[in-house]
Image (cartoon, rainbow, N blue to C red; front, top):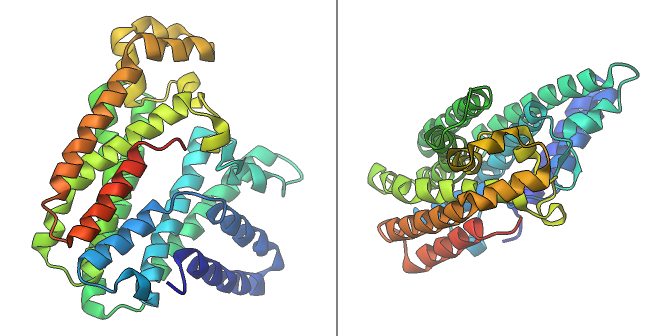
Length: 332
């Protein structure tokens, strides 16, 4: 592959920087921060799944990927950056991928009321990322018919992740979290957004029919929920040197994850704990951590079984099976 999604993103953001600085040179800092956030790492999972779906649907093989599909795949990384920036504002997270979160970095531009400025600027930066993600997708270069089909899926993705985020915020302000509520959030904030819709988007851009596209949820939903459960475990117990963000913040904040809801079901007294070591002990002693590992294993097997029914060459199915294992057994 001569060009990848990262190179497409760099070129695209360079163009946006030139446009922005024509308006005012001070706007360069926004594009610089967006470029820094995009370039700071990440698994590039959504673009990878778009490319997988495109190849599975009969698009170009991996060594001949063309510019339109790279631009479409890159748009999902910009969309994801929008979600991360605003999520960090809502969660008041100070870091992301081992660097200061965007609202922290942007706060340095203010001479007074830095925190409010940083949060306000980060919200606007997230909006820019969303707008530019749309532009990358719409101007990807695909013919009208597959692009129209893909945009239907893209719009569903954007809607579902936003509604899922609202459910997450709602659960965070509820009296007590439930495992059922957490799984509902996991489905729409993670499973459809991270796994299902990207694959379906790639299939649609390749011209695949509705039957093929309809086989994806049976695989993607359990795979995506398992991915989120792993994320919750890493957020609670992971090594910051590997995850790139502080460990235990979700526990200290009482974030309504499935892991925390499970802990409270069997150890309700954990709600009164303040010390991180005590909170982690409660997660382990209640059996919630072990239950999460068991659920991840069950969901992974469900996903891999459903993967066999996706109409794709055996080699591509094997590739997705390996990626699934990487998603759910990762350490960062």
